Image (cartoon, rainbow, N blue to C red; front, side, top):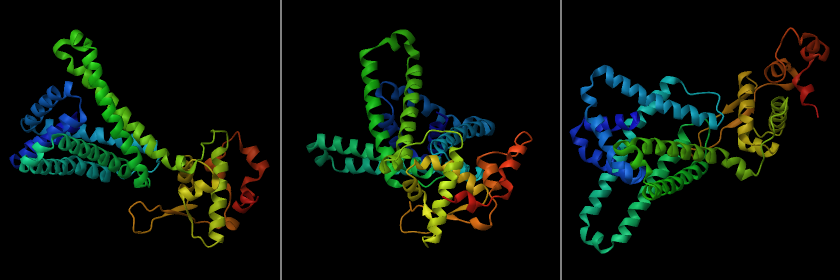
Length: 358
């Protein structure tokens, strides 16, 4: 709600964008919200946006902070789905998402206005093919929503997400949103209990239910996009047994060391997951720890495609590297109770080569 209000408030602040605002409201009315609640909701949002200029500096700051907090919550949730441990700098996230709040609706408004103008300018053709025009608008509506979700899944997680996987989740969201919208509209038509119980306030619980459904659909789409690589590779997730991350770290280091000796110059995360036959998302926390002790690094290279995977390269020499940092990070942290066990096991005398010996 705060996000949409801020978006419409930006349009209402500039009279030259009036047609863009009208087109955007019409899109929100027809595409994102069931018809039973769209008109009263957009009426309220437009009223709030129109009054945004009169609430003063403090109120506008609170509204903007609320919208950014919502966006940062989305950012945090999507990064958790992708199991990202390293977040972007806070200032960078705020600037990027503020640009999305302002420029994204503007681009959508311009495209929708041009589409409306093109249809109006071809009245004779449109009247001749009403069914075709309606189908075309539905396809454009579907494509715009899917493209928005694909961009969300591709750019928001601080992890490499291929466009093919992002589009898989986006198409799922677009289809599920349409089904949810039709299902909710059917339910409200066949079961008029909301109006009977809540009367004039029936819009509020319906809107809250719709927001919940939309959020669930978006999260499910993110799960589809995040797990698309493991589904494509037909690998399974290993159960979280004691010492699993330490074992995975040893397996990853062994594969990277083998790749370096073979002159491959590193492996991408999908390649590493395919060799180990494990879910790539399960390797992310281990990779974060290995990068934290400066044993592994991600090498980003400029390529012809935007979704080129970075290579993982081994930074240490196993023969000359003590095994203690890896043991401390993933197996057994130093402690008074475990001191005798660590001395008896001889962790301080071990090298990484001894741990990688098969």
